[in-house]
Image (cartoon, rainbow, N blue to C red):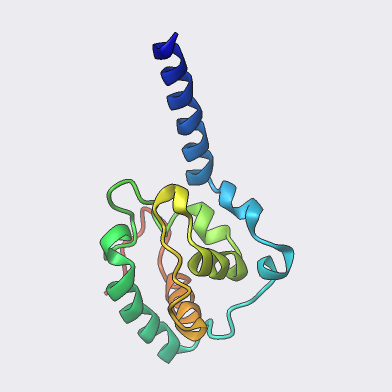
Length: 131
């Protein structure tokens, strides 16, 4: 009986973690946040600073190529590429504890937008990274 319960608990946890990895977090983003636009998209200086911030804060989990490491997701995936700026801003601010994504609310909002501006320059999976 205990073994059966443990197996059910493990299966339930796996389904929950899969939902978090599959983009289920997008459903938690409030409408007002979902609709936000990055005011720094396309600004070359914001992109350059965003790249530095990404390298300093994000590469331990997502790698320099943003393809993900240690079970963390690729930031070049279709799911991330199709997420709105507001979705990404919400994720950076609140994190996703079920997948080990810490909240980055300690970073000033402008720096979080700079990271998003940089992420928007990344090529999709299968395309080479710019130098």
